Image (cartoon, rainbow, N blue to C red; front, side, top):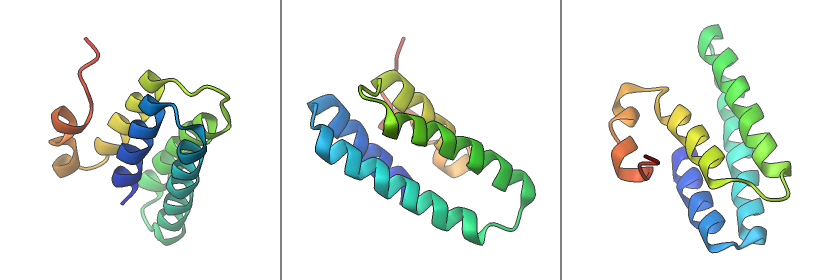
Length: 95
């Protein structure tokens, strides 16, 4: 679900719709907070908290950068091997 919202946020970021982008980041933060509340593994908890800080920085940024957003999205997908396989399909290659 967090990945779905990251994908929606990327579309809003490209279209320049700041209002919808802000709402998407709010949903991402809320879903992340719910994930944090139920997390038992301390190593994953530490990493997801760090990742949340990246999203919070994008949320408060006046002009979030699509590259920073894609980097955060890539890190989220790398949390699990199955999700990592989706990177070529959901994140444009920056090279």
